[in-house]
Length: 440
Image (cartoon, rainbow, N blue to C red):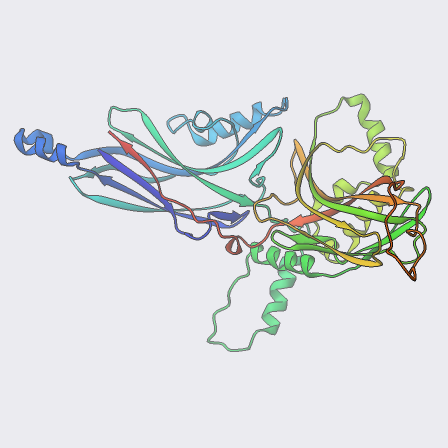
């Protein structure tokens, strides 16, 4: 029997970013159990023959499992099938999903012979494609990555071992001229020592640098909250972009209000908007509506990090989603599938100022967009207001101040979009395990 074990080199976290290198150790062992060893000693010498494996390969696959009906997958499947090759494994049949991204298979060995108790170890490394989607488990669609290790014994079928990994999206810099500018800037700041080796800066490092600047930039924005009865309060959001694991911190000011807020709740919600192909006759109407309302979706999809760092994208996104003049009020805003991740609730009848802290978990998927789904994040506010400003006589000289038996209240909701980016995978603790397969 041959025992195959696979373990990622990064033991503390099985999470990788797009464009990052995945490293895996694969071990092949000719395992001998005690009952087989006894039988081989009592039998002839042919039973002690070595095990022979014809070949073994490893590659990275991204699968998509969805309930959407799409017609543009035939060409992609044919392309991937041609790239994988007819003599290699059929990755489509190895997992319940459709292969949308596949790296070229790397041959580990050919014609491997293992004696009893002998072990051979191989090293596999591959870059996660930059244009691939992140790992996502949604309502109607799923994206997941697996390292597929395939091997075949002589005169036997192909057997596979899969190692799942989690992939986080890193925005791609849309301006190619930023790469040489950053390199030249770093060279000018470096010490002029001829004996120092010049290290090339990768595109992934530049993306991490831009992403750090975007999420660390503080740009407070104030929002006036009011309903048909008057002014309720003012909300301040200190920055519009966050990373996984951070807290969304804001402040609410109820001073000089015309309508008293009894209590409020803030929910961090994830929106899953399906993107389906529309008929040709409706494309002109859609383009006209987008030009009048502002294409905030395209601004989020472009991932122009320089524009985000300057605050242009964040300003346009917040203006288009919060102001009533930039969007048609009669047209319903698409909500898609909603998932509430975290909630903050406070009772604030006699409160002038308070703060809002909503944590962002590490296991969620950041903002991203593909050809079938658009995943966004928002803060969903629910305010319970009343026109009763005071409870009876303020500061009574004797007795106690009692609340009324009934309180006329109204509920109002408000949605504020936020952008969530990926965190450094090394900061997310997710220990991986050893995956093994036994070939009899």
